[in-house]
Image (cartoon, rainbow, N blue to C red; front, top):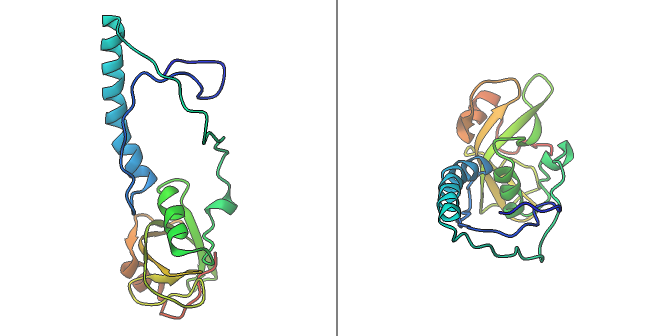
Length: 175
Protein backbone atom coordinates (compact mmCIF):
# COMPACT_ATOMS: atom_id res chain seq x y z
CA UNK A 1 0.00 0.00 0.00
CA UNK A 2 1.06 3.59 -0.48
CA UNK A 3 1.80 5.40 2.77
CA UNK A 4 -0.37 8.38 3.76
CA UNK A 5 -0.61 10.54 6.87
CA UNK A 6 -3.46 8.49 8.43
CA UNK A 7 -3.21 5.07 10.04
CA UNK A 8 -3.59 2.40 7.34
CA UNK A 9 -5.34 4.84 5.02
CA UNK A 10 -3.26 4.67 1.84
CA UNK A 11 -4.40 3.06 -1.41
CA UNK A 12 -3.61 -0.62 -1.97
CA UNK A 13 -1.66 -2.03 -4.91
CA UNK A 14 -2.13 -5.78 -4.45
CA UNK A 15 -4.09 -7.97 -2.09
CA UNK A 16 -4.73 -11.62 -1.37
CA UNK A 17 -7.19 -13.50 0.81
CA UNK A 18 -6.68 -16.32 3.28
CA UNK A 19 -9.67 -18.32 4.53
CA UNK A 20 -10.09 -18.15 8.30
CA UNK A 21 -11.48 -21.49 9.39
CA UNK A 22 -12.78 -22.57 12.80
CA UNK A 23 -9.83 -23.62 14.92
CA UNK A 24 -7.28 -21.52 13.01
CA UNK A 25 -5.10 -19.70 15.54
CA UNK A 26 -3.59 -16.24 15.21
CA UNK A 27 -0.15 -17.86 15.08
CA UNK A 28 -1.17 -20.12 12.19
CA UNK A 29 -2.70 -17.17 10.35
CA UNK A 30 0.53 -15.22 10.86
CA UNK A 31 2.53 -18.11 9.41
CA UNK A 32 0.20 -18.36 6.39
CA UNK A 33 0.40 -14.61 5.73
CA UNK A 34 4.21 -14.36 5.86
CA UNK A 35 5.00 -16.07 2.53
CA UNK A 36 1.90 -14.54 0.95
CA UNK A 37 3.04 -11.04 1.94
CA UNK A 38 6.55 -11.69 0.66
CA UNK A 39 5.17 -12.86 -2.69
CA UNK A 40 2.89 -9.81 -2.96
CA UNK A 41 5.82 -7.49 -2.18
CA UNK A 42 8.00 -9.12 -4.86
CA UNK A 43 5.16 -8.85 -7.41
CA UNK A 44 4.51 -5.22 -6.47
CA UNK A 45 8.19 -4.36 -6.95
CA UNK A 46 8.19 -6.01 -10.39
CA UNK A 47 5.09 -4.01 -11.39
CA UNK A 48 6.65 -0.81 -10.00
CA UNK A 49 9.81 -1.40 -12.02
CA UNK A 50 7.71 -2.04 -15.13
CA UNK A 51 5.74 1.17 -14.47
CA UNK A 52 2.36 -0.54 -14.28
CA UNK A 53 1.71 -0.69 -10.52
CA UNK A 54 -1.92 0.40 -10.02
CA UNK A 55 -3.47 1.45 -6.72
CA UNK A 56 -7.07 1.29 -5.45
CA UNK A 57 -8.44 3.17 -2.43
CA UNK A 58 -9.20 1.20 0.71
CA UNK A 59 -12.86 1.06 1.78
CA UNK A 60 -13.62 3.34 4.71
CA UNK A 61 -16.45 1.25 6.17
CA UNK A 62 -15.57 -1.18 8.95
CA UNK A 63 -12.34 0.58 9.94
CA UNK A 64 -11.62 0.36 13.68
CA UNK A 65 -8.59 1.04 15.83
CA UNK A 66 -7.17 -2.13 17.38
CA UNK A 67 -6.09 -1.21 20.90
CA UNK A 68 -3.64 -3.20 22.99
CA UNK A 69 -5.10 -6.40 24.44
CA UNK A 70 -5.39 -6.34 28.23
CA UNK A 71 -5.33 -9.19 30.75
CA UNK A 72 -9.06 -8.73 31.28
CA UNK A 73 -9.66 -9.40 27.57
CA UNK A 74 -7.46 -12.51 27.70
CA UNK A 75 -9.35 -13.97 30.70
CA UNK A 76 -11.91 -16.50 29.44
CA UNK A 77 -15.53 -15.66 30.25
CA UNK A 78 -17.26 -19.04 30.32
CA UNK A 79 -20.70 -17.36 30.33
CA UNK A 80 -20.22 -16.39 26.67
CA UNK A 81 -21.44 -18.65 23.86
CA UNK A 82 -19.05 -21.48 22.95
CA UNK A 83 -18.29 -19.95 19.53
CA UNK A 84 -17.18 -16.69 21.15
CA UNK A 85 -14.95 -18.51 23.65
CA UNK A 86 -13.32 -20.57 20.89
CA UNK A 87 -12.73 -17.42 18.78
CA UNK A 88 -11.16 -15.68 21.78
CA UNK A 89 -8.85 -18.61 22.50
CA UNK A 90 -7.76 -19.12 18.90
CA UNK A 91 -7.50 -15.40 18.19
CA UNK A 92 -5.13 -14.87 21.13
CA UNK A 93 -2.98 -17.93 20.47
CA UNK A 94 -0.08 -18.19 20.92
CA UNK A 95 0.32 -14.66 22.29
CA UNK A 96 -0.81 -13.23 24.61
CA UNK A 97 -2.97 -16.31 25.13
CA UNK A 98 -6.44 -16.69 26.62
CA UNK A 99 -6.46 -18.11 30.13
CA UNK A 100 -8.52 -19.41 33.02
CA UNK A 101 -7.65 -20.25 36.61
CA UNK A 102 -8.19 -23.51 38.43
CA UNK A 103 -7.21 -25.09 41.72
CA UNK A 104 -4.56 -27.58 40.64
CA UNK A 105 -3.59 -28.74 44.12
CA UNK A 106 -1.43 -25.79 45.20
CA UNK A 107 -4.08 -23.10 45.08
CA UNK A 108 -5.37 -21.22 42.07
CA UNK A 109 -3.12 -21.48 39.05
CA UNK A 110 -3.31 -19.76 35.67
CA UNK A 111 -3.69 -22.01 32.62
CA UNK A 112 -3.22 -20.73 29.08
CA UNK A 113 -5.49 -22.23 26.42
CA UNK A 114 -3.83 -22.38 23.00
CA UNK A 115 -6.54 -24.05 20.90
CA UNK A 116 -10.28 -24.67 21.32
CA UNK A 117 -13.28 -25.69 19.24
CA UNK A 118 -16.98 -25.27 20.00
CA UNK A 119 -18.83 -28.53 20.58
CA UNK A 120 -22.04 -29.90 22.05
CA UNK A 121 -22.53 -29.91 25.78
CA UNK A 122 -24.31 -28.09 28.56
CA UNK A 123 -23.88 -27.31 32.21
CA UNK A 124 -23.07 -24.42 34.47
CA UNK A 125 -20.58 -22.14 32.65
CA UNK A 126 -17.00 -23.07 33.52
CA UNK A 127 -17.84 -26.66 34.51
CA UNK A 128 -15.56 -29.41 33.22
CA UNK A 129 -17.89 -31.86 31.51
CA UNK A 130 -15.68 -34.83 30.60
CA UNK A 131 -12.21 -36.33 30.41
CA UNK A 132 -11.65 -34.78 26.95
CA UNK A 133 -11.47 -31.29 28.51
CA UNK A 134 -14.90 -30.12 27.37
CA UNK A 135 -16.04 -27.06 29.33
CA UNK A 136 -19.60 -25.74 29.52
CA UNK A 137 -20.20 -22.20 28.27
CA UNK A 138 -23.18 -19.85 28.39
CA UNK A 139 -24.54 -21.75 25.40
CA UNK A 140 -22.88 -24.93 24.19
CA UNK A 141 -19.43 -26.01 25.22
CA UNK A 142 -15.82 -25.80 24.07
CA UNK A 143 -13.28 -28.58 23.81
CA UNK A 144 -9.91 -27.32 25.03
CA UNK A 145 -7.49 -29.00 22.63
CA UNK A 146 -4.16 -27.53 23.72
CA UNK A 147 -3.22 -26.01 27.09
CA UNK A 148 -0.14 -24.87 28.99
CA UNK A 149 0.18 -24.45 32.76
CA UNK A 150 1.85 -21.30 34.06
CA UNK A 151 5.58 -21.75 34.42
CA UNK A 152 5.54 -25.12 32.65
CA UNK A 153 7.31 -26.00 29.40
CA UNK A 154 5.37 -27.38 26.48
CA UNK A 155 1.72 -27.55 25.65
CA UNK A 156 -0.44 -30.56 26.42
CA UNK A 157 -3.60 -31.97 24.88
CA UNK A 158 -6.77 -31.56 26.91
CA UNK A 159 -6.68 -35.16 28.17
CA UNK A 160 -2.96 -34.91 29.07
CA UNK A 161 -3.58 -31.66 30.91
CA UNK A 162 -6.41 -33.19 32.94
CA UNK A 163 -4.32 -36.19 33.94
CA UNK A 164 -1.47 -33.95 35.13
CA UNK A 165 -3.77 -31.44 36.81
CA UNK A 166 -5.88 -34.17 38.43
CA UNK A 167 -9.11 -32.43 37.48
CA UNK A 168 -12.29 -34.50 37.26
CA UNK A 169 -15.57 -33.83 35.45
CA UNK A 170 -17.63 -31.45 37.56
CA UNK A 171 -14.62 -29.28 38.49
CA UNK A 172 -15.14 -25.53 38.06
CA UNK A 173 -12.70 -23.45 36.04
CA UNK A 174 -12.58 -19.74 36.92
CA UNK A 175 -12.47 -17.21 34.12
